[in-house]
Length: 80
Image 1: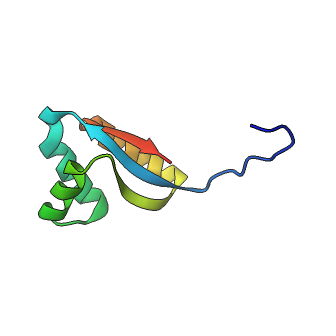
Image 2: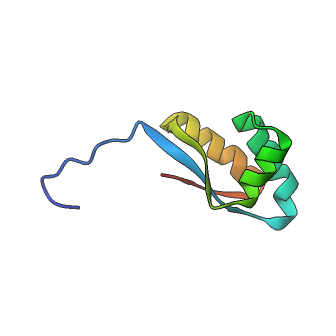
């Protein structure tokens, strides 16, 4: 970081699915469906396309909570 340059505090982030444990794939798909409201086919395609952005522009607090839920079921999640 350059000195004197104020880092803008992010209020919204993208929730990105970086990957998942193969054994947990079904659980991850279920959690993605619950979070995004997608249908089974869409959620499965999204999970299988990882790394992929699950939800863009989510409030930081909400994103942290969703990240924890996804990681609990075996997903690897990044907030960007």
